[in-house]
Length: 116
Image 1 (tube, helix red, strand yellow):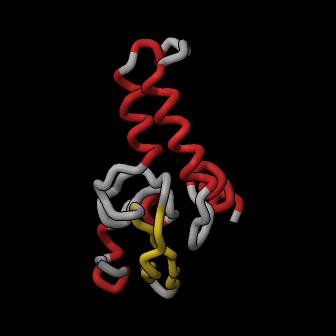
Image 2 (cartoon, rainbow, N blue to C red; image 1 turned 120 degrees about the vertical axis):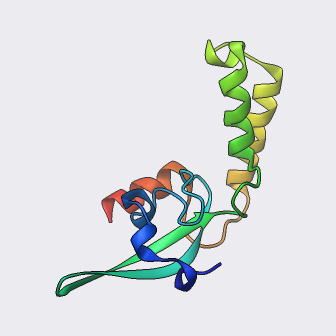
């Protein structure tokens, strides 16, 4: 799906600002550009660049697997060492070191979007 197929009137503020996926509404950690949508408010028209989950909505990413584990793990929640959590966190670090296409993602991507 592209931005041209999205009804801009259905997008939330978070989706328009690039904080949430324009397709599924999930908070973005790893993302991909969809294009732009334009919303008119009287005589004013504003164009927003919208983003979607990467690789695709609902597909597990290393960060998503790590967070999913940490939420349910008593050791991780208590800040104690956990073999599974450590392995998943290592996978997140490895994925972040891999070459990325497009813009930066995750917290640094969010910070750059907030500053821009």
